[in-house]
Image (cartoon, rainbow, N blue to C red; front, side, top):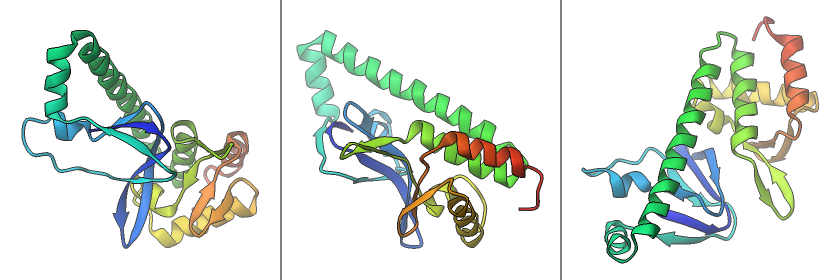
Length: 189
């Protein structure tokens, strides 16, 4: 597993040569813990890549055993951090399930954008970013990419999203997204 000491790490999955970001991790956050904690070989669901310059600390089974032998207090701190991560991820999963249970695709997409804005905001060079791409949304939503791109373009045209590069968008204003949703729920998608 890896502890992010500095920088921002993107977690995501690749499909059709595009990397869909589903989470951003900053300093103090861990990833890859399943590979160390699982009793059998673990097939990872997401890949990781650096969004900025990153400094990581790798912690394997050997290091965990050494920590246990040297400092029960440090091991307790590490386990508390792992439990916090697990609780945070469970809470996020519950929120995603509530969003995905909606029948209106606009509500589902806007709900996921708002969810990303809440959980995936990171600061780079003093600016807050919520990176969105059709692939990030498609990780959760079974909506054709072309339709997703068209809908994101519609949101961009209304000033709700800002395209920052290629297929990546920034959601600068959650209130504007909520207002848009109130005025369009029930309209054909």
